[in-house]
Length: 469
Ligand SMILES: [Zn+2]
Image (cartoon, rainbow, N blue to C red; front, side):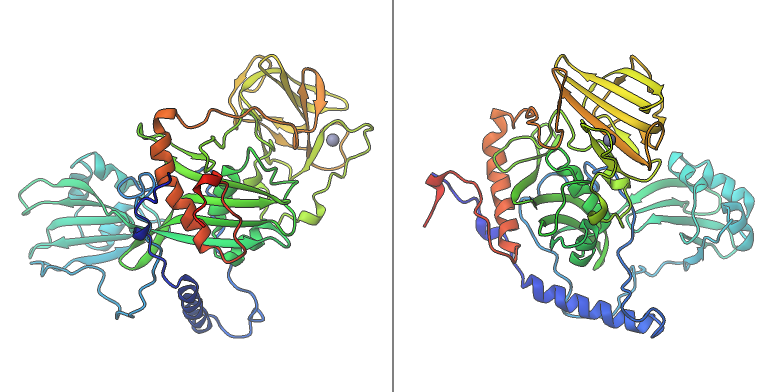
């Protein structure tokens, strides 16, 4: 008998309305900030292409640990509070002063510019291991400090990010500095994005408001099921719940993807994030099967393939070898190539037709081959043991190739198979001891994902007995 776990804790604000308000505000700001007519007005600044290549396990330890039991959706402050001062300065005896790091600055230079003593800088750097971070400062970051009446330094505060600062203080000029790292825990909110692909995944993502880094995460989650280089088609769609980090009413970053659905060529793939009792976080299907498999669907780092990658041009262009027993991945020279699975390199050599090539043996049955490499990955030679996802080489056009691409072959018991369709061994499911907890947590999350979507709902694959009517 299915019990709905505290379903009332999910709040669903009029999300779309809020998005609309947000967009309108953003647009208004843009109009103000952008000189009219320069870019034809149509050129929206696309979300920054900060390529976060790896799924960060738990971005912000304090808050983002595991699945938030109560999903609270991102809710932009509607009651427009006037811009508050960043921090209520609790009437300090001595006012803080501020200095922004300029290009080519060192701390010594800043101190000099501000008329602070070099000896005090030295004393601060000696005040503890946290202070050592002051040796790595970047333009744009802000140094705050305050002095006593005689201009002797009493405190230095350096913000590395909105979330992290270093503070060195002393009660008076005769005391020693003590330093500490100040970390602020952002508030985690859950945001939702969805998109339908018509030209490319990145275009759809940008339109949906999902930053590129999250699209990378999304592709990483489904990389065992979907070949993101070859198999994305117009009409494919995605729905994503993900964490945002907010601080003082401002979005300061993103956390992990909490749940996602990807419809690819009519097949619906679903994944939900789950942190087990032992603290390990992984993605599972809503039924509790691991998303991971023994082999990646595509051995190229999709994330490194240009975001302008055009789907219409991604059909294999090197079909002159007949019969063609592999798959070609057209990609820029230098695109990293990953081992599709754990194994041992049996060959890393050069050949007049294959160019630089690598063969990996995966256990008794499986073998993968990678041809035309620009060069080998670090330490890749015959006998090297490799892990799934490890970089074994880079895309090139050595040997018989008319353009940079990876030629990839997948063999089962010595027979060529289509790596995009071959049935891959499934990884182990959720531990039996975790199952009840898993279902209780993830059911709510999947329901929330389904609730947010704007298109027709695809019924979740739940046992028919759970149908409530
Ligand atoms: Zn080929």
